Image (cartoon, rainbow, N blue to C red; front, side, top):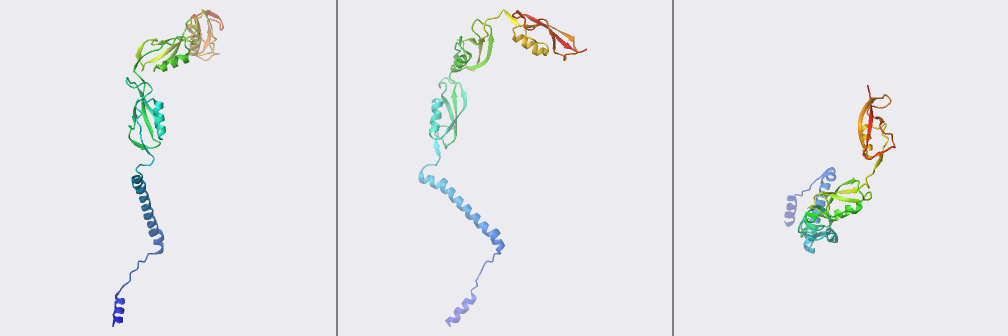
Amino acid sequence: MKNETAAITMKKRKSYTVSIPVKTFWLVFLPLCLLLGGGGALGGFYVVDRHVMPRIVGVHRDMVAIPSVQGKSFEDAREAFFAIGLRSEVRGREFSEEVPEGSVIEQYPEAGEKVKKGRRISVTVSRGAEVATIPYVRRMTETQARNELRRSGFTVGSIRRTFAPQPPDMAIETSPPGGTTTSRAVSVDIILSRGPRPTHAEVPNVIGENLSEARRRIADAGLNVGRVTTQVNAALAPGTIASQSVAPGSKIPFEGSVDLVVSATR
């Protein structure tokens, strides 16, 4: 009786199977399983790396706290950053009555903030007090005068030359003059000597030059352009110098005049 009951029970049980086409298995089911498995592995690695391990170790790897460098010289600040794996750059320069020239006024990001190693920290460097006295540069070379002005925090403007008893290229003054107390934002021009004022100058040859070039060369020789007239000359291009009143190479009094004749068409 029991055997009959077991047989009837076995007949009532049904078996279920899932049939997946071979093509669908290889093209859809298997790649999907691999994708989900790989995503889960990456997600697990991220959680462990970013959350679990920092909690176990107690610190974030490759993260450092930015030291305070305010008031330090820029060189000392750069070394302090470099020592813990950070880089530095000058964000700007500003005048400051409190912070000495060349020292750090402020930094960004601020001290105490944690950043990754290799991060570049920007600093603002002091230009010193805004008001200073222009140094005397008389009898210095151009290079010496430039360095002296820069040491005092001033920017060198233009270089001008004039005749003076001092040897050529020697500094004779600045503009504004040395000893003047002014803002360091003011550019200071350096005035150099051209040597003693000459009594005579040699006349350059400007025939064939255009008028503007002729004027420049005559002025560079320490002479002036006198009367300018025109004359028809088919051999020369219009606007070029056909002749000059003083022969080239002649010596005439310094700042004397040379008349010019310019070619023209009919």
